Image 1 (cartoon, chains in turn red, orange):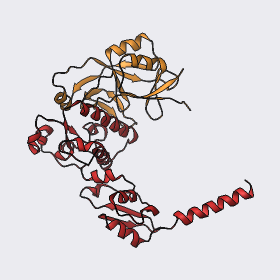
Image 2 (tube, chains in turn yellow, cyan):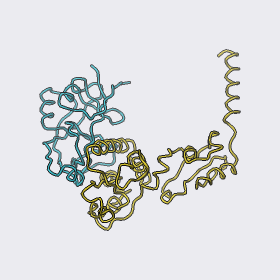
Image 3 (tube, one colour):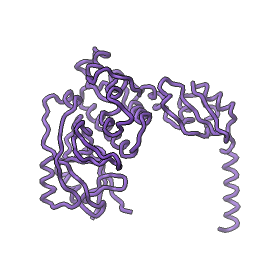
Image 4 (cartoon, chains in turn yellow, orange):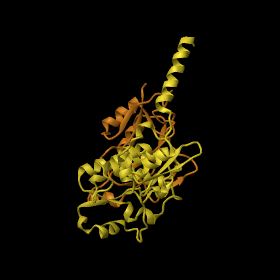
Length: 209
Length: 142
């Protein structure tokens, strides 16, 4: 490497540090996250772990993140989602993916008891798939899989078939990539799918497109 | 010869009668029960790196003396979701496509990321047999 190239690289690195390297203070991060109902905890090396203060998020643990400079003046949900490294759609959908406990395995009866006006109009679909009982038996139970919170109403039309096929492919990719998925990861995947397709479900969930 | 990575239609998943060896990844299926939740009509279907084909396709693959796969029995069933969508729809006979070849060398193989890899001649056959909901990309055996 020539001396000139070494000098240019050193200058570039210095410039990069000046632009991006200044960390936020704890107060700045706390103030920013509080604006979105988020709370932050800090490690000794000033990295922030930010948790969304939603009803289902006790199951989610976020890795430490360094708050990017671009979010210094964050004032929107989109900015908040960047802070914790998740999409805005995911944040919006996150609380939709939960388990309850079903008293019966007759999931259709469970769904239509809660949504009687939809009987005959929708097909009942499991957000976290039934086969997770086979693939991750220590992470899910039948009572959770068939609980109302895990059920989605899908309109009976051909578009639904195409979307469900896409959803099954997404789950298949997830299974191949996650041999030891936790219940939290399963719910997170279901929330991502809700964010994509949930506006077409009946009742709608997750703010999907 | 060119080889291709396939991501076939996923029409359902493992049924309650399936047995798995979960000490390996992806789980090794020892008894295959494929439960249909829907079906867009492709003759090759997947769930978690296990595959089934229609009996018609199986016979054509055997006729080609394709390498890297053998066939076994699979139990087929329809879920409540399938019955609700297609109350009177029947299903053809299916066979378990057990892939045991080397990706990029045999007609059937699995990639390091557990994807199905097929030779060009098998891809041609699959297309002829009506496979249209499968994602396809070229396999690079580096």
